[in-house]
Amino acid sequence: MQGETWMKTTAESSSITAALIVTVVFAASITVPGGKKESGIPVFQKDIAFTIFAVFNAFSLFTSTTSLLLFLSILTTRFSEIDFLVSLPRRLIFGLFTLFLSTTSMIVAFGAILFLVFCGQRPWMIAPIIGFVCLPISIIVAIKLPLLVDLIKSTFFPIFGTQSYLESCKTNRKNTIFMG
Image 1: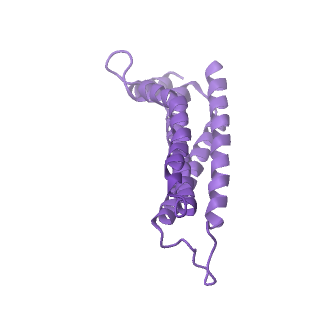
Image 2: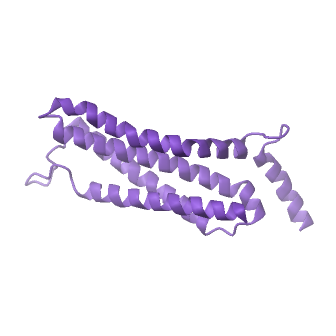
């Protein structure tokens, strides 16, 4: 019961974060920074910073959408005992990993646009932009990385003896099918 509650709470809070990222990066992708020329081509199209923005913004959109779908799949699962051994931790691991990627990509994309917009006239702004980009990335890594490492260790690496949880689940799954 405690595991189910913890898993649901973690998935809910992470899915809210992923949904916010999806919303923000989608809005940023359809609102072209710097505007467009009369021909419809973005003003900053030839700048490397704009290309970095476009690539990382798209990557953030795709990874945050993936993360959101993984967390929603956790919330809609049946929460059986066997699910806690393999499928739920695996979904949570991949969901957290894609959430890390989407958050980092979003921050890099917005850092690239800040660089593009402000650093041409004010080169001194490069240092604060880099600092602001690194701050949220380091905070989310410091907060969520221990959880991700623990989940990976307990799911994919042996804890007792030489058999990992994944291997024992395959064995237990065969036993529970015949026993249950």
